[in-house]
Image 1 (tube, rainbow, N blue to C red):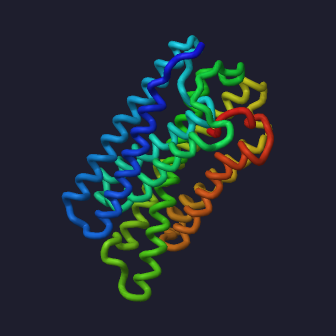
Image 2: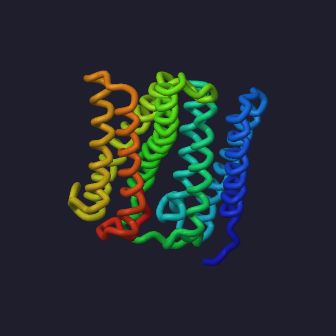
Image 3: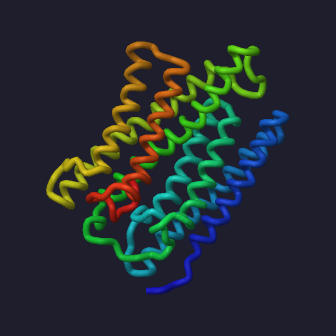
Length: 284
């Protein structure tokens, strides 16, 4: 059933709002004026509101076409949702730690995710019926929890990048004044992963339950499952080192980098390079 879709327009608007917000955060980086920081927060909040409306419209549109599913089933919808979760996780961290500088990366990642939804192979805004394996309530639970984990790890990646810059300059000249100190960045990085790790854990568990429902086996060492486990082990090592060994600083930032590389391969590499049971599905 063909119909005019409103949701892609709303997603496009939110994408441009995130791009504008990224530019405003750069201005905030340059001069640290409080009113610019408030403007950036207001803009990204507005973008998130429009983005949320788009997700609601997308859900309504799936029902109007007669297919009626939670819009998380393909590459297009997963990228849109990934962008939304990145912004939400960032705003929660900004509210908690008052470090707007991190918004530079959050808005850039959010913009890039929506932009990628229109150019990557297999990413199509058309609403289509779900294949039988995806017609399960486990779909929403699994994808939502995984992507909240991915979003927290994306924010952590940006924080780790800032940490490594600040760490380098603190050794040379006492640090960069417009960046938070390494102690603050290290703590926010840790808190990001504390949010993401349980989400990924629940995502893997619900994915196993979904696999049993769809294919009759909880675990089959499919490439997606294998790389999800690798990602989980890297972040488990991060938390283990922090909690039991009190590791901090550069080593933790590098672990965060490695973890996000694994996230990206789990998300894109498995879908476009490796073949398996998840080849047809959106990354989750």
